[in-house]
Image (tube, rainbow, N blue to C red; front, side, top):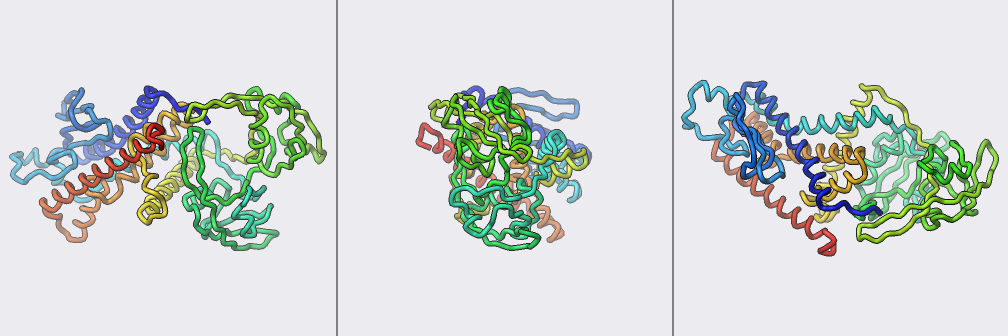
Amino acid sequence: MTGSPNLLTTIFAFLLVLGPLVVIHELGHYLVGRLFGVKANVFSVGFGKELAGWTDRRGTRWKLSALPLGGYVQFAGDMNAASAPSAEDDGLTPAERAQTFHVKPLWQRALIVLAGPVTNLLFAVAIIAGFNYAHGRLVSPADVATFTENSPAEAAGVQIGDRIVTVDGNKVDSFADLREYIVPYPGQTVALGIRRDGRELSLPVALADEKVSDEFGNESRMGDLGVDFVLPIVGDFTEDSAGKAAGLQLGDRIVAIDGKQVHGFSELPELVFSRPGETVSVTVNRDGRDIVLPVTLGSREVTDGQGKTARVGLIGIRPAIDVQPVGPAEAVRLGFEDSFGIMRMMATGIGQIFSGERSVKELGGPIKIAKYSGEQFSLGWADFIGFVALISINLAFINLLPIPGLDGGHLAFYAAETVRRKPLSLRSQEWAIRMGVALVLALMVFVTVNDVASLPIFGG
């Protein structure tokens, strides 16, 4: 495991994640509001006491506030930052009232509110599309290479060489597609559509309930088929690769290490990690012939989340995975597809927490986001930017929930107004917003306590 970043790095990374995403979100509201002629009185990054700011020629106060956990645009006619409407006897002239938010047609108000979450979503789509365009699309089919120990798929009758084509009726084009249909469902039974020898089969598989840890010791529950889809074929070498120095070549299929058979790429770490600097016999199949090569393993010192260090052995190879280049239009399509897939997984997770299938301890708040921000930042810009995209999707999703005080709550008001053909009374809206804000604040307190309790100092 990798050592956790220091406090200053964590704070810097957290601000680098949240600050731009808040600005992007609020700019969505602000720009669409301007498009429809609504005056913005305040554009704030953060809540509470103003730390710095200026007023532009349109009369908008741009400011940085003390509590950096969000932001808001207060349009003309708003009573407060939650966009509660002001009283009708507001003392505005007709010209000033024409620039207020609440006199605009319903469809314009809905678009202004929707613009914030949509802007966050589009920002994430742009990042994911950029990754797809730069690195291509994974197209390796979900062909079973081998099974892990106590594999649920093997127990259900799946065989090596089977191709998984559907999960619960959802089409699977590559093994990367399985994540959305497998990972969120630990312990549940799914129907696998299998293609075997030209025949289509359907097998019920009770997924394993796995608790996994990342390189920083963060644990999570996820569903697992117990299948490795990546063959042990050399696709690339790392820098200073021990395997390359010993004569391994691209396209070699690793058959065994010190006589122990290797069926999937995921089996390699357990055969080399515990043997740093040792020489092992690697049997590879090359052009139909088996060749035995002595490989002196490399080594690297790693540190876990508790500060304990250990030295691990490295062979220095990467798997051969079929990646297909994509053009700009396809990259954008995949960006939307991946983003909506992430949102569906978020919705599934929240539903499981409400149903009791997952613990409320899996909810995270600002402290956990800050922790993850620092960790991803320490891994490099690619991992960090991918994390920013994930949080941006998270912000879009949360803000679309129909909770008064959030964007989704306002959209719910407008839906009711459409059905009733008249708006809810100002008193009803005000009380709903108060309750919604109280609910959000209570949730914030709860997840923050959750975060604190999960810190190592408290035994988490």
